[in-house]
Length: 138
Image 1 (spheres, rainbow, N blue to C red):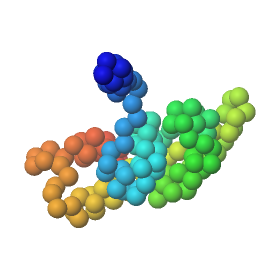
Image 2 (cartoon, rainbow, N blue to C red):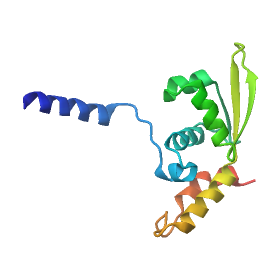
Image 3 (tube, rainbow, N blue to C red):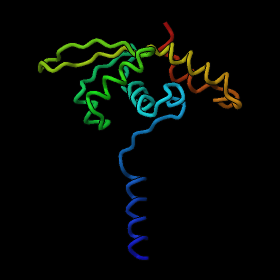
Image 4 (cartoon, rainbow, N blue to C red):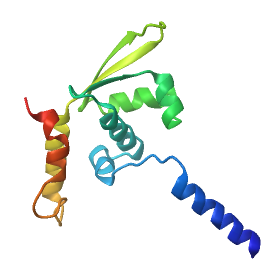
């Protein structure tokens, strides 16, 4: 029994102290795929004030532990929201420049919200609007 408790303590330590990759269930609903939801969530974490960022396939592989093939599949699957251009970086490695259509993501999330039995956001302030609003204001 002591071994079981020791293992449980180790798991608890890992769960509460290790780096985590979070995927909002809303992004899984939006993309209809857990990996695509994860990829989209991470893209939204990386964007700058212009809704853009760059990332090499190697960086995706190291960070999310996904293959180059999966990265390519995610780029295709998320093409409704992501526009990509591949260029060589200063080291000569191919790097993908991503531009995210935050406004379209926002519209699609609102459509999901309309179909839900319960509101996505509590009455009052819409947290998504305040979070993503600065990127959709032009």
